Image (cartoon, rainbow, N blue to C red):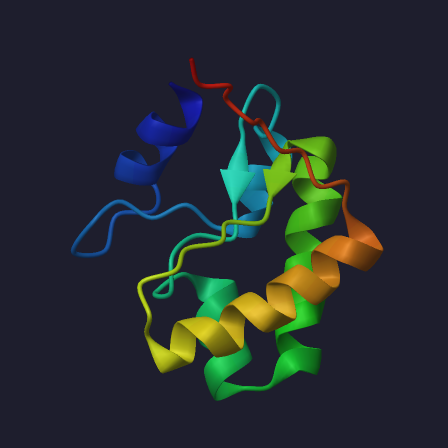
Length: 105
């Protein structure tokens, strides 16, 4: 509720916005992901390079800790393959990958 209210009252510029300082203050109980191909970290991988993207990734990891997840999607898009390769590399060295396998019949 606090994030939503503050984004409208103090961060509104054409649309409500939430900055990293606000996330640091109110991250308790939130779960975050690296997002889809249009997310900040994937776009940084593609446009600014792996090193710059990793700095931002680690900033989110510092904020959310165990509640920050790497999101992998596969829609057979070249850019997505590039992003997934980097994210999977980071996952193997920085995060615990949690997977759920459903058993069938």
